[in-house]
Image 1: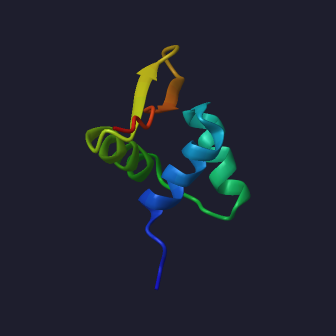
Image 2: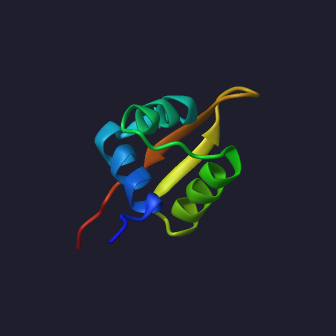
Length: 73
């Protein structure tokens, strides 16, 4: 069974806590996962819609990707 890319990207974000989109792509590439820009953006959008991550623009070319705090109770 193939591990869904969305889960793999989420795990990388969980490990980093807060990262940039380019650093995240580099970390995925280091693990042998190559994503097209459109697919990467779709995964980030899905994770943001699910309320798991928050994506914000830092500069015109760079985005900050941060894990939404996991509140209990």
